[in-house]
Amino acid sequence: MIPLSWYMILASILFAIGVCGFLTRRNIIIMFLSIELMLNAVNLNMVALSHFLESMDGQIFTFFIITVAAAEAAIGLGIAITLYRSRQTVNVDEINQLKG
Image (cartoon, rainbow, N blue to C red; front, side, top):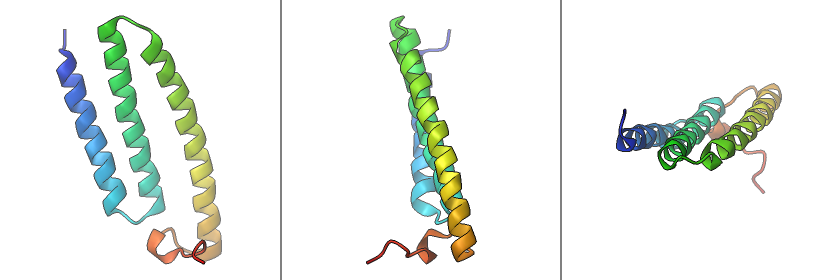
């Protein structure tokens, strides 16, 4: 059996890659993918802890997180397509539509 600490280390590495991708990239699609990677790291932690504690609560909560992540991805893709059609770019630095 794989120890719980290995799952935690893997999830920490995935989360760190997601944070690094979100902070360093300026492409809105890459930023959404980085957010998804961070959510999946949290899901991995929840499922591993749920299995370790022999409880179904973490696995059930993971399904809710996956549902919210799917909705976020669909809405984010719609926003990215709309921004590309109006501004001809998906670079976050060039989009200043919300600045006052």
